Length: 168
Picture (cartoon, rainbow, N blue to C red):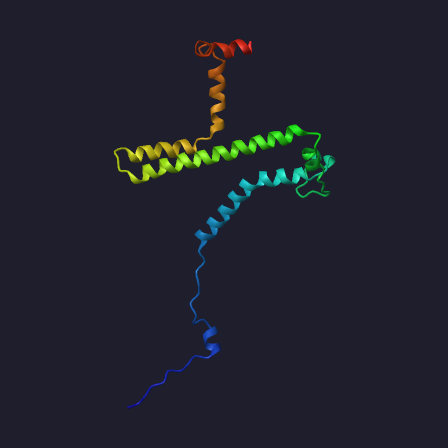
């Protein structure tokens, strides 16, 4: 009985093209580029605010603006936190308390409501979820114009006459 041995290919034979070549996934590359662009657009205002806070006054108003500050200063932070401006510290504390308490309340009520919607089966569940999603996608700043029109109309004087008396 003859035993056949298979020849082990040499390194040179393997390098000639016997290894499979990976294909380039252009769709994944495009998604990564799109994510990078969206991330840059979303984070650019935070970067601009941060570098403006450490620029000197003369560099803030230069034209064209500088992307990377030439001179760094912490004078703006020291000035805001000095003891001769107690209003800033009080306002910062008030904003922190309001932000923390509203976050805790929103998480508590939101998680209870989300649990109830997720666990129960009822007719119209898809519609309720659609309404919740559409409300979440609507920017609240878009309500400023209609609210201004509503509060400046005379019809509002029937509802809240004291507010209009104070204004005029």
